[in-house]
Each structure stands twice: as C-alpha cells, then as structure tokens.
Image (tube, rainbow, N blue to C red; front, side, top):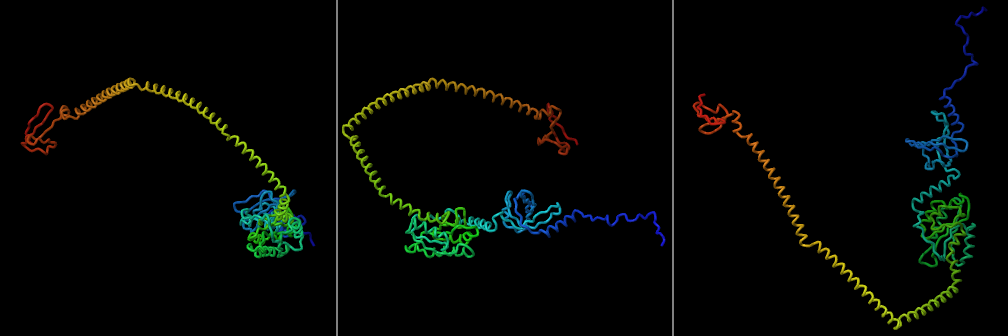
Length: 466
C-alpha cells in the first residue's frame, strides 16, 4: 500500500480526545448544586439566632440564622401559611423547619421556612403561650373577677388524685392546723389522656353538690391540686376545658399544682394560686390557726383591757377634780375681774385709736377742700373758656379765608364761562327779531326775515336776503 500523501493544509487533530474538558456555565453549576442539595438534604430542622431581620414591601421576610461559627440565609414568603410569625425578632433563638435550596441569582444556599418554634420549648410550650394569650384577651385572668377566699372555711371540696402525694400533704397540714375542717373529695386523674375532662367534671360536680342554703351541703371553696412533675405531667391543668370550668365555678377556687416554679393555666384563672399543696392547706387553715393563738391570748388580753379601763377611770376622776377646782366661785370671780380689767384696757386703746383715725380723716378732708376751692375752680374754668374762645376765633378766621378763596375761584370760572367773554374774542349771537330764538343753522332763516346780531359792543339789526 502506498504512502498516504499529506497536503499543506493537513495539520492533524488540533485537540486530541485526552485534552477535551467539560466546561459548565455558572448557571449550570448552580443548578447542579441546587439539585444536589435539594435531593440529598431537602427538608431539615435548624436551630439558631435570628439576625438581620427585614420585611420587604412585597410581604416576604428575609433574615439570617446564625450560631457561633456559621450563618444561614432564610426566607419566609408571604403566601406561606406559617404559624408564629410574630416570633421572628432579632436576637430570638428559634427552631425552624424548611427546605434547603440554592438562590441562583446570588449563588448562595438558603432555607425556605415552613415552620417556626421557640428553641428548647417545643410544641407544648407554644400551645401553653397561645392558650394563655387567648384566655388573657377574654378576661379569664382579670383581677377584678377574682373572689376572696373565706377566712374561716368549714367545708371544702378537694379535686385531686386519691393515690397521689398531694392529698397526703393536704390532709397532714389540715389535721395539724384545723382538724374540724370537713373535706369533700372528688377523686379524678390528674395526668394522662382524659385527665383534663375528669378535672373539669369534678369541679362542676362539686358546684352542683354545694347548696348555699343547706348548711349540711354548703362548700366554702374548692382546692384543685396535685404534686410536681414535668410539663407533660402537668399538662392536664393547661387545658382550656379546665380553665373554663374554673372560670364558670360559683365557688372560689384555689389552684396548687406542682412546685413553686411550676405555673399552669389553672393558676392564672383560679381565684388564688398556692405554690404547693401544703402551702394551699396552710392558706385555707390560716384563719382558724391564727384564731387558736388569739383565743389562747384572750385571758391576758382581758386583763390588759381591765387594767387599761381602771387607768382610764382614774384619769377621769382626776380630770373631774381638776375641773371642780377650775369652776370654784372664787376662781370664777377672779377671772371675771381680770376680764373686766382687760376690757377697760381695750376700751382705752380703742378710744385712742378712734381719735387718731378721726384726726387723720379731718386732715385728709381739709387737704381735699383746699384742692377744690371755688376760686381755684373758677380760675381753671376761666382759663378753659379763654382757650376755647381763642380756638373758635382761629377756626372762624380759617373758615372765612377758605370761603373767600373758594368764591374767588368761582368768579374766575364764571368769567371764563361767561358769554360776554366769548363775544370779546370775536364771536357773535344771532337771534330772530320776532321770537328772540337763537339761530344756530342757516336753514332756520328765510328771506326778508329780520334778525338781530349781538356783538361785544352793541347789536346789529339785519334783513335776510338769501
């Protein structure tokens, strides 16, 4: 086989296969990264602190979620139905659920938010806060609706578990402080599913059982209690049905749920909140317990009252003796004599004061009379009259001068407008000799008509020829 010839334009392969590279555009690379992130990660829960929060005019919310080492861009679109949007605040630590994706325009990955929760609290605490705000807005926590707790209760209703530690604590305190207190127990579950409904039914049952007009079935208050536990254990007392039952109760309700640091919805709605079951029992028996000490100290108190009464009566007798001495006739006579002397002194002082006042009055009147002498008044009136006459003369002279100037001006104008003045300039006036009518047009004449023509000096009699 012969050798293949090469032309001058045959350069071989300019780009060998082993040197060929796949070049991506930025958009293609970003799209690949976005698909990879959405496929491999997708929807996640992320926790961190909100910063750089801003709400656009479109209604979309943009912010950054950060921790100590990294940041994540987040967006919450306006059309997204996400609860608890109000939790988005700068500095707030949140737990977010969303879809992780890439924003192609800037090439950064971001989280599209689908759910918001407070960090470390969870759904139960969120439900607690939501129900708390709802009942607060409805007025279930209002202080003005809370009723006073009776100071000396004789019979109470107890709503708790019959096997719990709370009932033992309550009974122990009541037995020690007020053994005569009667307790009507309505046992119910205080934990788990259905416990809230049982608690509400127990409160309603005690309200139906109590009859205010029947002493044997009259309750003074209801104690709602249980021992401590976690938020889940105490959740039955955070249910709305329990809050409504407490609010609608005709009897005052004391809530003692958990320990001192535990707060439930029932604590806010109840008329009184106790930190523990034992503290609630002490509050209920406080009046009777205090009365025991009062009765124990009554004898000493009566002794003190008698001694105080004797001292008071002794002081009264001494006061009467003093008053008797004050009303003795001799003392009264001395006081009256002294009073007469004081009146005489006051009379002399008044007379001297009156004399001084009259002297001042006479002096003032003489000064005023000197100022209003008839000669002085006549002189003042004469001066006033002379001044008025002078003004009248001046005014008359000015008026006469003005009138003369006005008449002179009218004479000049009359001379200018006088017919004689016109005749002196060469004009004449022609009238009909028979009718004395002034002729202004030649057509008003006829042949052989006699006319008079008045000149500046004299009159010319003429006959019209044509």
